[in-house]
Amino acid sequence: MRNVKITKLTLESFAPYGTTANYLGYNEVVQSGMAFFPDLARQSLGTETIVSYSVCVCAACEYKIHTAENHDHTDELIMPLDGDALFYVAPATLDNSFPADRVEVFHIPKGTMILLKPGVWHYAPFAYGCEKVAVLCALPQRTYKNDCYMVHLEPDQQVFIQLES
Image (cartoon, rainbow, N blue to C red; front, side, top):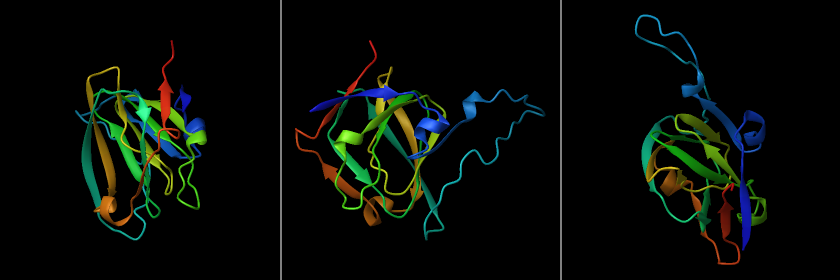
């Protein structure tokens, strides 16, 4: 089993996996009671025209990566809503083998969206610094049924997330 450290989330560090934007980071002056933040990220829906928004609530647990999934035909938007999260990714593979030795973990502050490219390995985020976190997920409807390849990792493939001390 291997350990992996948390990588600081920046546009550059996350670029191999997708993009990121944080609407909470804007210091716009709100005029007339409203602020608009256009085009923070673009999400490809593949051949679908309907996006489905889901919420995944993740409770605090052991920081161990034991499951991974990917989607061949679509991007996936992830955004922690009410707390910070740790989110792991690994590069897409041609043979659907999970590259445990290439896992990266990012600290995603609440309100920060990340947009995964097709094929990128990932799974549910981990609550970080809180008991639970609600995470918004946006995908074409029924992606979890029609475009989801999932693996459960053998103990020697599992990865522990190493927190900074």
